[in-house]
Image (cartoon, rainbow, N blue to C red; front, top):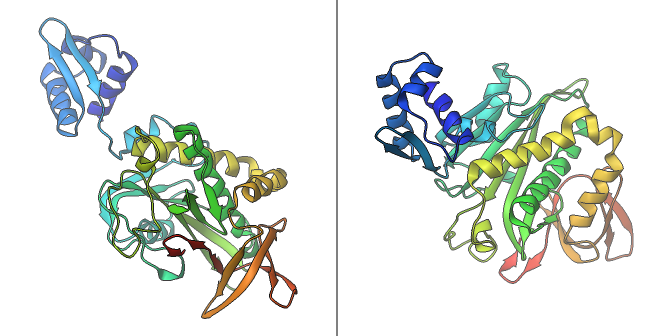
Length: 330
């Protein structure tokens, strides 16, 4: 699209003015078409100065989610082949699963400015207000069996931590298996879902939903004591497209070349070092049952090793834990 081509030229020449005549020649379009493209960019929030006899210069870019802004920052080999951005969705995971059934390729990414029915684990709601965070889902088609799928949740958690550390200079912690914490409060949730062939347990596709609070000013009363946002830890939180792109780059690094097979030990070690509940008493929640256990460690597959009150040890490969924080349990 012409406006993105022009924007690309403006970003490549941040200190220069580009004349309308030069842009029209470069893209073989009329000056009128250039003017319309500039107007369209301004309508989307880009501040572009225009001076007679000098041309156009990009002054600033808006903090928006857009295919262009994300793709311009990608270095990934797999993720981001297709990027679809919606103003509003019930759930990016639901839409990604629909697109998967329609045959969209591995690496497709679905994003929304808001989710009206965002979901977490155990069908809990996930607060996803307009333009306050990164709400996205990645579609993967790995050739694996269902038993291997949990490694993708681990990769996503490590990727989010890597991205936040790189852009914000702080490294979050992880509550097994998939919640990201800063200063004892949840800043990101991850929901991994898969479709498989029942008889062979071969995976058709996996969708990884990632929701990161970036610019939240407040939270609903029921979660205000247990949720947080990146803007509460840095005066200049990353732009949403910048953060989305960096998470995709980090996750792609872990997915590409079946890293999770070749260097699985390194991945598990990084994940273990980020966990915030090892050695602590936690609630183990499996279905409708809750029990008090001590979280001891994780095994080579990322399963949680726990000790029960009777001192017996067991390995937990599904379910979740709840830890005590000042605002309650989360």
